[in-house]
Image (cartoon, rainbow, N blue to C red; front, side, top):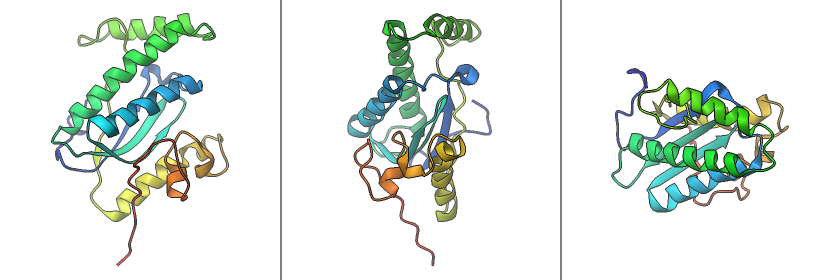
Length: 188
């Protein structure tokens, strides 16, 4: 991770984006996106991850979160990425309908060979680019950016129609994750 992108405040609210190595479109299959959702739920319930906004795109994930149980946010995110990496690789290996299985696994293996701190397969890029959110305006800007990603990609017409994001929570509907902390913007 670049020196310019660090988690400096362990109690801060952060915007992070992390991508699949090579920006490969792995999350075109719902079963892989569902593994991300399950892991986010686990982190909410057992690891103290307070989620304010999220979105799973075809090759990357956006997340606004805070660590609320005295765990450093970089360790919380690292645990999440390690676990999801292993579970998605396993799901690809076991998915008899995965036409890209050999290509994906070979690519992940070659990426691991390039890295000194990764063995077997590397699924996620190492960079997260955490940005601490410091004002109402910046928080609102990042939430809108996250929720408009599927619209910009032509996946849906309205952000709240995309199942794999918190946009429906912000539209007053129930999303996939419980306990989304919907940001309330108040102009003074």
